[in-house]
Image (cartoon, rainbow, N blue to C red; front, side):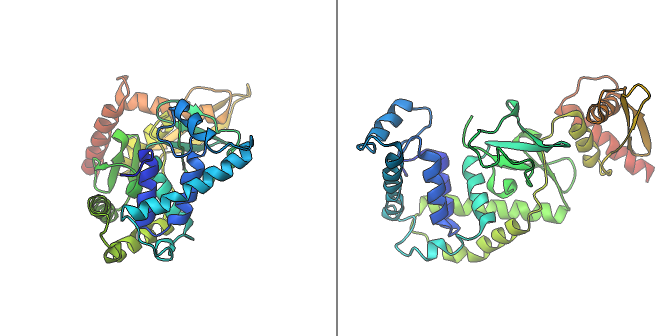
Length: 332
């Protein structure tokens, strides 16, 4: 057992399995530099005690240097526990693959994920628990106007299908769900089956490696290469299922319909009114002060019409998706 917080230990283990250990060691070092060598992030008193060991010269900067030097001992620790051998070249064969490294980070920090929601000028970040959140000011993304990914992972408060938690099959073929339906993925049924198969084999490999650290993972080269290939081709699409527009699109997609489209026009009083079109129907929203709000209102009106005034929730989205699916079959 590695004497580190579980999420960081998971990153070290998977980084070793996927032969990208050096960059993962560096990332783990950075995530833990506030509490060097120590376990949970909430144990500040132990962290300060550890930090004092590396601050002999009354310099925070030199303390960080010594802390980093201390983190180098983790390779020796991994080697002593037989999780890696002395051949550093082998364990870093894929250290140049940024897609793979991102996936390892995701594996360690899941379910600490937030959805990147782009608007006209910038973007918002949302988590399931807290809704809209802000980036830490020191983040490299804090000054970026756009982020070209649908997800970010965070240490406190993709990649997700293979390197996140467990997932389940949805109401239709090709529909996979995570986190109780807050994360959803739609794809061709054959691709969904492939993901399920790879996820099962990858989980089994990680568990076997934990039970038998000396196991040679080179025997699983084809599996690891297949996962790496998928990561390199990932289009990075997806979102949390929250907000009326997301709920409406999820409802229609589950039933096999195309995504809804919105038409917005400006009224004489400078307000905006949107119409949402789906399944041969058009539903108009109420006047709003901007286009975005008008589209949200139109989506809310559509959902209200579909559920006939019933309280919304994941259960009703599932129910209405099945009803729409049945309606589509009857129409065909």
